Length: 317
Image 1 (cartoon, rainbow, N blue to C red):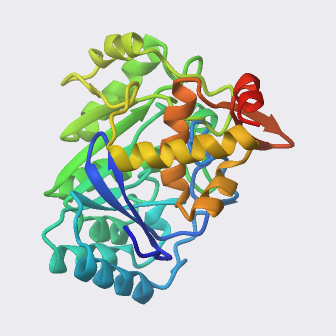
Image 2: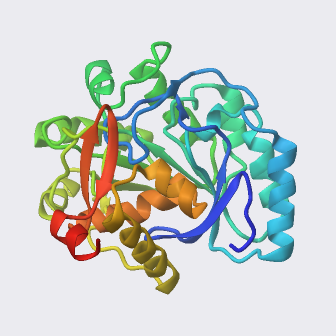
C-alpha cells in the first residue's frame, strides 16, 4: 500500500488469510485483556468501556479511498493495536465493507464483549469472526489473559456461545497455549470441552512464536501442539507459524529492519516509527527474525529492545 493512512495498514501477509488489509479502531494499546503472550506487548490502557475511540467517518473515508485506488486484498480485517469491539461503532465499519466491497470482512476479537447483545449484532456483519479461548475458569483466565476487573470468565464463554447460536457466518476459535500455564493435557481437555460447547466451525491452536509481552510466556513445540490438537473434537488445526513463507516485499522490509538493528538496538515502536509501519506489521517481521535467531530481544526498564547478535553488530559497524 503506497499511500499512508491513519487507520489502515498493509495489506500484510497472513498464513491463514493471505493478504490482509488491517483496520485499526483503537489507540495503542487499548484492550480489555492484558495477555501474557501478546505480540504487541503489555496493555497500556486496560478498559471495558465501549466508545468511539477513533472517528468512524474518517475510517470509512480511508476505506473508500483505498477501495478506489488500490482495493487488492484477500480480506479486510478489523484488528490492530487493541480490541476492535471496544469501538462503539465497529459494526458500521463492517457493514460498510460488506456493502461496498466483494472482499470478505474479518473480525479478530478476544470475545470479551460478545456477552453484550449489541456487540453480537454488530459482529454479525463480518464474514468471518475469530474469537479466543485460552482458559477454563476464572483463575486460569486471570493468569493467562489478565482481564479488566469488570470481566469474568463465565461472561466470555456465555457470550461466545450466544454469538454462535445467532451468527450465520464462519466462526473460528483460537486457543493460545503457553508452557506451564495452560498447556498440560488435563488443562487442554477442559478448554476443549468448553470449545465443544461453543461449537465453532474451526478450533485453531497457537503458541508464542513471536516475542510475547512476558518473557515467561514460553512456546510449545510443533510436536506438542500436534499431540494436544487431538484432544479437541473435531481435531484442532495448528496455525502457529513455525516456518513463515512470505513474498519478496515482506523479505525486503525484513532485511531493512535487520540492517537497522545491526546498527543499534530498537523497540518495536521505534522500528514502526522509522519505517512508517503499523506495529502489527513490525511484529510479523520481528517474529520471523527472532524465530531464526537473526535478532535477539533484551528487556530493559520494562521495555523490549531488539538487537542483532554482538558479532553481527561488530561486522556491520
